[in-house]
Image (tube, rainbow, N blue to C red; front, side, top):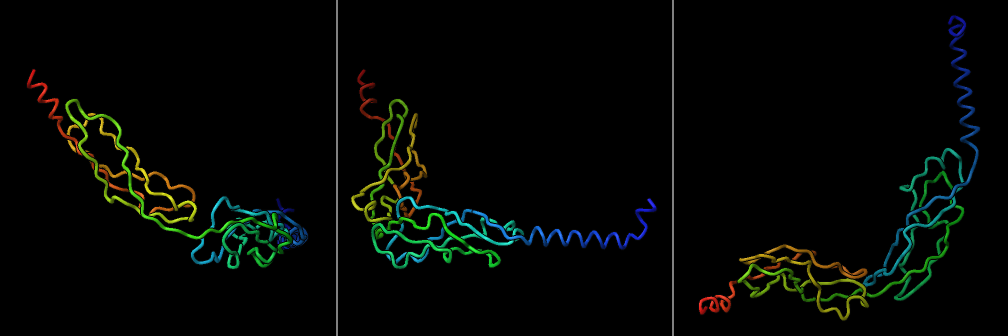
Length: 222
């Protein structure tokens, strides 16, 4: 062990120098890498909305020091798509290296695909009737005498082609199997189609259950 400890200061210094040189040689070499970057759709014109399937990421080729490229993560990378000058309907927007937000110590070489097809449509709103779905059969000798929904209507907001012409939306099923008294449930509304959004997701449905008097009278006569 004595030979290991002899001149240990010089040996430690040599090790530090060797590691430092290795870092500058290996980490200082420039390289290229392709990574996905999430897309940010920005500056959507007022009264318009993006519809249809839209890409969530693009592939970006970067160049830089190996040490810098090794530190890149998805959280560091964003491809910004500016829709400020896009009108209603289908359009093609171009992505250039300057569209990518990335750390300063790397260079963006190219974006793939370099063009994206997007569709904007005017926003529309509507008030539609809530239609409750009642399933099951009450207890013998009982019948459903009425159904009430609170609120009776809900608002829709979405692309004009998906909102126009809609007059109602259904609820999730309310099961009254075996019930002898009114049944009240907080239930969700059926999912809205496409990009349509609802002003509320839950309504209260009350199903009135009463005794079937006709059946009782028939039993009395017998």
